[in-house]
Length: 144
Image 1 (tube, rainbow, N blue to C red):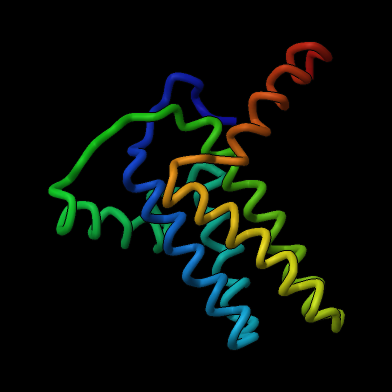
Image 2 (image 1 turned 180 degrees about the vertical axis):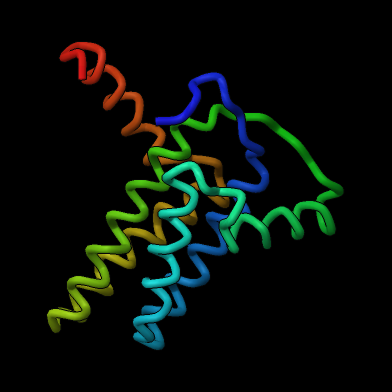
């Protein structure tokens, strides 16, 4: 996955989560397929060790620098990477549901994404990170 001792900046992560929420909310109103496609692309970059190329991360770094004077609070990267992978899977499911003409289910799944993104950005609760702890327990128990 990722180096278990690697750290990332929590304020940047929370700003990215807010950006995801704004984009997902935009999708629920506009139904522009390009929005979940962009989210899939960005989650892929952040979830598979290419976060330095992520447009949302780049914007979040700029916002953190300008508005929060480069605030830095290190957090372990592995749970956040795992959460980004879940975001990519969720984005893919949203795209699939929308393309196969289930817009109501697509918006429902988008609402779930919005809730998770707002939890992360506003109160610092990372649902994917919570799942990551269970994933790690299973992985160590079954040695995979």
